Length: 249
Image 1: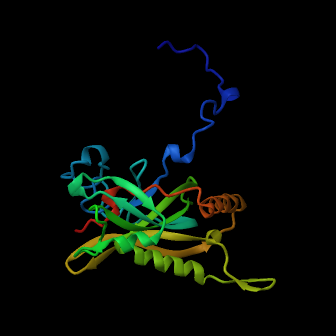
Image 2: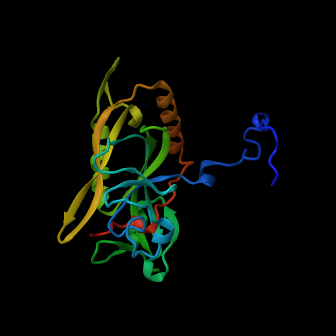
């Protein structure tokens, strides 16, 4: 195609044609952990050709949408501002039956329709798995401020509970006494840690208290996101099935 001799100024048409494009249409990036068997790392995984990340290591934190590493051991911790929380019950087809996302259940009573297998997984009568998943919506503060979802399931639900306990334990002094500040009043440091049980090992999330938020613009964005999540208008997209269960080493 022939290139114009002078640059064209598109500023008067900025954003035209994208008026109805929402974040859901673009996809919400998740924060994920690379495991030994993850397609980003394991060259024997059939999805490695499409998802492989050069030089990544088990324990690295990556962006599931761009498929790029955001943190590796030895780097500064990722600073994450949690703005909203949802616990959802995600139904999947088993890998043996072809895999794939089925639906999201909001009501915990779906678990009453399940039976446990030897790995403590919840199975419906139709053979599908229901994965209890804790979703934290928020922003990463490292470099470019960007919205992410962090999903925790299986062994990581214990980490989710500890994180929520950290958040709810915070108290501040107000004109009428002590109160619990909003979830987005503080940021938290994210890294990973090797976990073991019986003869299995995997990398899980490590969440530590960071500090209080002070940037008024970022606080305003966090408040807006918190209201959206609280309204129920935004559901977390399910994590990829290979991330729904911990890959054991």
